[in-house]
Image (cartoon, rainbow, N blue to C red; front, side, top):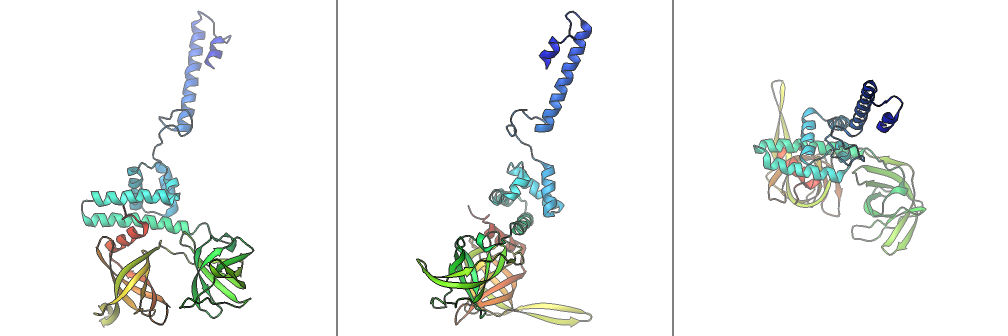
Length: 365
């Protein structure tokens, strides 16, 4: 462009007016190209290949991602601090990548433990960090729904409900063929239960994002496989999504104690005062899975639904924790005992943070 201007008929040697015109055009050209370069690459862009220069943190992208998650101002400020501390430049990409997000949040979690002025401030900041993480998890669970049994992965755990309403834990062997192949249900002593051809059954399962599903099917036949007897079930294109779990759940094997709790009420004037009374007797159990919302406890002294319990356990760092919960349902596991599914009713912030750190593995090296 500049060579063209110098060679153009407008430029005449020893003509000051022509020289001024050409110089003005050259300056204008440079200004225009500089403006285009800034628009494409930002201030300080190299003008070369896209992405070759250092990228700056995008507050606009952060606000857009925070709006989608419905975060408040304090959560947004903490999220920005966590990203800036870890050198994250693209908040939206990070929030869509669970591995990168957990790496970032784990570093932020450790920084909070080291730099917080007091333990109370540390627990408050960790609680806010986990509130963001659980919000992201809930948003992930609501997307990518499974609509066909043909898309189920091999070896997915599931629960089969027989025509009589009995439930059995099984695994989906394969969904690739014309039929859905699953393990054959077994009795309490391990004997395969052969269901009749044409029997209507129900399968319940959870995806990797902790979204629950339920589907109706029927038994086509029972066949022998290298893994033992297996059921061939009819595929289904009508899969019902269960209400989302609000919190990510982790399989565990933690010893615990639980005690029966009575809720006593008494009326004082116009007010009703509630008082919790914890039974002195404690029963032994094992926490099979846990989340910020509740846990499952296997015990020979399992309590029926509706009971309130106090749960006590130690984490991997030998710190003691306690929570108040209510038994939602109890599944029998043989002649004695069962598995209690418990919803947390009251839980200290420190204990809740410890559970979240366990679930997301932020407390591990």
